[in-house]
Length: 87
Image (cartoon, rainbow, N blue to C red):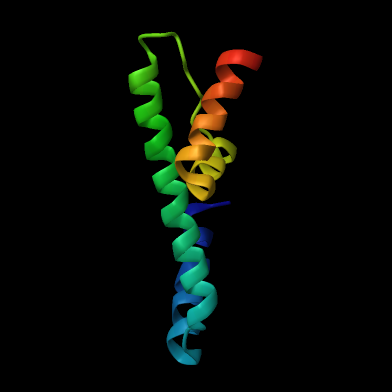
């Protein structure tokens, strides 16, 4: 997609939201999901930083960040166990 087209689409969406108002509940869910995704990526980053001593590395991608973010510490521990013992 061309950069000009991308900016035009974003601009139209902003104008549409300003004219019609924002539905708060879906935006709240999207915001919470994004925050959980970022927290999951941070969990994986700290796991990788601490796991370098024992040769543990869990890749940080959208799937693993989502699992770690929505399941929290137990999900991160499960990813570490799968990476260490199974893969």
